[in-house]
Every structure is written in C-alpha cells, then in structure tokens.
Length: 430
Ligand code: PLP
Image: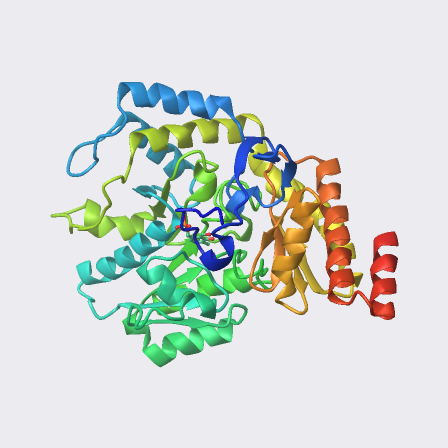
C-alpha cells in the first residue's frame, strides 16, 4: 500500500491514505493531475480562485515583496507598506464609511476575531454581559472555536465536547426565529449575529426575499451587531466587493478571506464600521488583546494587492452578477433528473443541485471529476462556483458533465433495474 503522511482536512484518512489525487498545475479555470489529466475547476477550489489559476502577476508581486521584506510583525506601532495599502483599499471599498481593517490568516480566524471583537466592544462600552453570539442553521463559519460553535452544520459540531458557551443558532430563513431567539436570550445579552448573505458550505442556500434587509432591521432594533460573513460571497462571487452591497445593508463588521488573494497566499480579515472601531480608536483607547503572529503579513498583503488590481482591471467583480443568469440556465434543467430534488442558483456565480439520496452527492461529484469537471460535494448537494474568468462554453460543459455524472450514478445505483436504466438513458438524451 502506498501510504501518505499528509492528513487531509475534512477527510476520511482510512479511505484517502492510499488513494490521493495529486494536482500539479493550474491555468485559469483548468487543472492538471500528475498523470496529465485535465479538469475544469468548477468550484474555484474551495470558492476562492476568483481570478483563476496560474497568474504570474501575483507570483511576481509576491516574489518582489519577499526579497525586500518577507515579513515583520505588525504589533504595537509597527507597520509595513503592503498591509497599509491593502487596508486602505479594502476600507475604501467597504460599504461602511470610515471602515477599519484587521487582518488574519484566513476565514475561520476572521470569524473568531469578529466574535471576540463584538464581545470586547460591548465590554468596552460597559456592557460586559452582552456576550451571546447567534448563527444560522446550515451556516458555516470555519473550524476555530467560535466558528465551530455558531456553525449550523450539525456534523461539524459533533465529537468535540462542549463548544464556546453563550452561542446558538436559528433557522436560516426566518426573521421571526431570529427575533424570538434575541428575546429569549434578552437583547441586552446578545453581542452579535453572523450571516452569510448566500450560504456556501451549507448548500448554497439563497436568502428569502427581504431576509437580509429584515435581519439588518431586527439587529438594529435590538442593538445587536450584524456581522456579515463574506468569506465566500466577497470579491466578486456575488458581483460586488463584499457581496452584501446588493441588499443596501451596512453591517457592523464584515469577515473576508478566500477571494481577497484568490488563494495565492493565505489571508483574511475583518472590516469594521466606525461604530465598532470608536472605543478602540478614540479617547484612551480600549485595547483589543488579540492578533496572530502573521496578522498583516506583508507578502500575503502583496498578493492581495496584485489580486485586487486584476479584479479591477479585468472587470471581474461585476462578473459574479453578470454570469448568475448563465449559471442558473445551465443548472436549472438538471431539476428533471431523478436524482435531483432541487436546484439552487440565481444569486451570484454559485449554485448547487440537491441530491436524493444525500449520500450520493459525493459519488456524483467523483463521477463528474472522472469526466473532467471538478465540482464540490457538500453534505447533500453538489456545488458549482467556478473562477470569475469562466466563459460560456465552459459553463455549458459543467452543466452537460453534471448530467452525464448523474446518469452514471443512477446507472451504477440500479444497474439491473430497467426503469432506472431507461431513466438514465433518457436524461442523457435531454
Ligand atoms: N466563513 C465562511 C462563510 C466560509 O465559507 C469559510 C470557509 O469555507 C470560513 C468562514 C472559514 O474560512 P477558512 O477555511 O479560511 O478558515
């Protein structure tokens, strides 16, 4: 048995230890494995390769920074040029006026930073009992302490013992449930509510009509901080910089990661409104005793600047919205397949097909991969979120390959069942 020392995230190592797929090269929306097979990256890796793979311009910016100053910490009064520039640009792009930016090394750390900052904000205002943090069912906010605790995918919380206290979550589509939960805890005890505008890892769940605006209203009425988790939705995925702009809502904080560098180097962060920053930035200045070694890492920030230059120059931010209809059009017809119970798409360049039985979602994703298209299997669905550079024929290839993969799986599931086999053939024909 050829064994590996690499422990893969979110993976069953008993199955993967001698069955890895090694990716060796990427170019725009395409990937190649070590055997030279080509795949269309239908998920932008984990929703992050927004400018596509193989951008020399970002590699050059990283190299140029590294040979001048690879890193020096940003604690106390120390700063570095790339972090200053990127913070300024991200703040100016934010929907909140006079925003500030706290950098982290990824999305989960951004979520934990925002949750701690929310609690610290209230304690600085003399309301230290405001600690409760609410998330949403099917929500995903990373694997750190708070992110795990407010995450609404049950399987991700199991087996870890007690999680962070004073956290809970509510149905993802109900304003009434959110308000009832705030009242149950007591408004004066609730620090913040976390919301992904379109939920990603939980299955690409779209917000109901007026939900996002309604959340802003509920939070405002109860004085609860609204934290928009734009780790997936930002940097063009929904057609704007932070994803939240299309609803005209100004959150108190925005968490970001992924598309800020398109994955060329790890980086994330929190954008805060001036309201949240004020107790820390004025008067005697409350201290936020928080920050990781690599916060504001200059080389990672240089990658972010080069990535944002590309997003701006090539008009890629708008493409998340421009292509949402085209993605919807290639996924929607799959609703007639016997294995598909629902198609969710229409907001941004992200969509999913819900599979029944749910356990076959991973099988469908593998079948598509064998046919040269790599989507992402979620709990019970298969998600599509390609780089923003994707072209129409490639989008159509995703749709046609998914149908073939669904047919393959249906055929395998019932090879001797005449009805299933003829259903498989008929869906291929459509
Ligand atoms: N928040 C959301 C909405 C995410 O989708 C993710 C990751 O997928 C995270 C937070 C965690 O980010 P990271 O994996 O960089 O820690």
